Length: 174
Image (cartoon, rainbow, N blue to C red):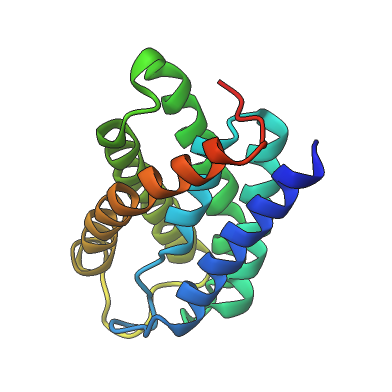
């Protein structure tokens, strides 16, 4: 793994950590998780299994440290690597379209839906959902808007990041 790639992945996870830490938890402590968008951006720019594993684990640990969801630490640690590998698999299936902004945005939304589903399922069975919250209520109120925001953010940030990486001497894996 090249040092430049590690530094860029670290910067993306760092930006995601700031977004995750400052985002309020509007409903039962569950946040709009924009750490996922940065994680997906890193996977899109550097699609290798070792990068996917690394960024998934690190994003999960940092999300667990900054979560406001009661009992959300372990679900965060598990859902990020799962979502990272699902996103990576879908990215590989996208073939020649994987470098398009539309594909990156759609895949970010799908990856966010996967992450939210895994998180809520694990939270439900491990710690229970807080208060009178229901799975479907949290899914509709938090996961769906987060998926939409993730798609929009990816559509804005991906072309910029792609151009920065292409102008630098950082090898992007195809």
